[in-house]
Image (cartoon, rainbow, N blue to C red; front, side, top):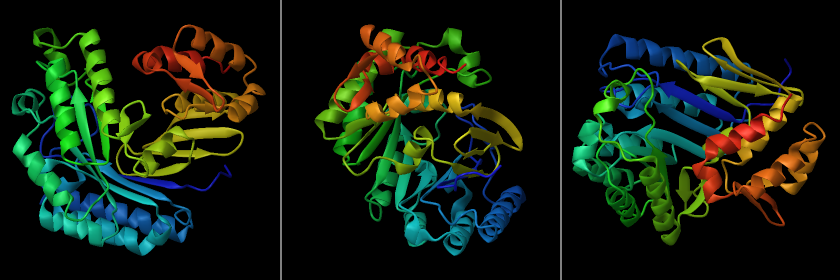
Length: 368
């Protein structure tokens, strides 16, 4: 279908040194010298070349190389991929270029190469600074590895994000706060904190009855205390799980929540295509979502509530043409404390974020 230009590019490198106990993502434990990695990266480079010739990369504004663990494949493979991107994408137009990394595979030379090849943001998967907790969730790095990797990253990159997790087996509210405080002390401008989710098929899910898991109330306390610590350090919450200093919010991640079309390359990567009347998401050649205009509006209202900026009054007014029940639904969500309103529009409350499934479901159900 005729569609709006792609502005985001996501590239999936699904390779890891090992599978973490909580991970249900498409990841493969291949060593960097495995011939399949060479074949996979060469396939990605071929796709990038083809898409460039077709004119589909001319409006790209954000690039995100995710995984898996992109840094696990090593300088040779990651460098080849990033060099191809520098040839076939106009990086002068790219506002944000992120590469995900894990501490055990991020080295000083790799940091220098990624910077030289155009990346301007690193997302480092730390999860915790507690070695016992790291072992419990199957991470193969230590707290000292994380500190070493961050030090290497900061030799070139100002824009470094740390990913942390809470609600881990054996974790206390005080322990979670110590992780957040450690991240703050390291001076990073962006921190994401994700609560543990036990997904079917993972090692932690199979062992769930034997795990010493924090209660839901404890997990909520962890999120609230993290919010207090991060806001106090000048890292403002702009999305349900993410805090940043002004100017360091993730542009690529926000594009997912703002209905910006994006291309996904690699195993399990999703491409979102849309025009004024239709939005489609395709993964591995199969259509996962096919939304009409009203469903798009309901989804956009829901996604807006992932962000502190919320839903503007003007956008809500436009949506009401497709979703006549929206004004009343917003009022009812305010009455139960999931939303608040001001002159700018409607915003999620702390309670709304903690009860996100309820809030998001109420808005999605507006579409016929």
